[in-house]
Length: 560
Image (cartoon, rainbow, N blue to C red; front, side):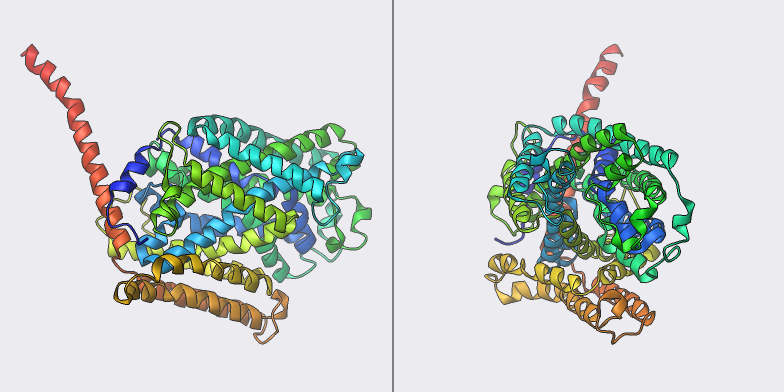
């Protein structure tokens, strides 16, 4: 199946989506995605790596997410289509780069869903019941834990099966709860106990050095959390006014979540009993971090609330990601890399049900292989960063290729923001440490047989420009794997690159590939198809607007 040359099927499928989500609903989607299991575990994992400097790690993570989100906000407002983030690379560079970007993005998002279920079950294992303690062995879920997490997965998808309006109403209510409980938790812990000595003792503010702070950004759940900014973009086809609501939802959700996460991190650092730090920050090993601290300071009511929220917060995020991943599968199918079955949208409910079922099966597979929240968080975080790199390149490439397309969101500073976003993404990928970077890059390569199945049957003359335009992304992944392997020991490398210089080298690599990527974009068939589709939609809207004026004009004529 080749990339679509006609807009007919695409337009028809998108007509089944309901444009029912406003700014508040989309912000709730973004915030609900960001505040999931990350707030339950992120503070402890970040503190274990970076100590008190974990506060800085959250700020860096938000800055990275915000910079990259700005590039995707322009793209999302240009192309308000389901599964938006899996499409942009296809529009700017054709099938190879588009497929790799879509694969990385899909892996990063679909694996969050079992991660949320795992988080809920892991918190449940702290309950004072024998059966509950048998759900988690300290490293991964037991067989009974996996079974319970599987039930939660089914629940996430069931809530998405019937209608987008049911999803929106359920998610907005859950998001209110998810904002209130973390805020209440931070305040209660700050009032219960706050030991300022923790910020200077036990090795100082950054006990493991600043390299550990950077690694915390990449693998402790910070990137995992802020990755939720893309959920509103993937629901762009269901936004009432995407040009205004998408950027507000994306940027607003990141900033609100940053305040909440920093407050939680500060409260966590100050509330740790001194005895638990006798072995240093790296010795922390709570099963249910915030609930354990609540019990330690006699806040049993808060512990019970946290145990309840350990279902609500991850379940809300899992429900959102079940929705967004199904739209992503729809986008991949329209890119030409999945059977047409997965592009079907139920006309009654506006839900892409075949795509929803596929993602449920993949979520079960991830749950069977990765049974702990930490291992899933690492995989998700690195795959997320790989998926980020197409946004900065695509946004500037499309300014060159399609300057005539309407851009409801257009930043004058984008020529500066885009390369900075590419550098940030490259640095976070490097900070994830070898060999994790190599493993996830290998996982990206594992998806290429699917691309080959659909694309290598084309005549070489037709395939050649796609290969040429996508070469930069393939080369980027190999180069970043090599640099990670050869990098400084602080980031798990073999020490061939000296400390400090390695970061400059990675930044330079990011800029070089940004320039290559922008220069290699071309006016491919997918871009031509979406231009035609947008033009047809604009014409239909103009006709509808004209038809709406006819009755009023007739009435005015009759009065005359």
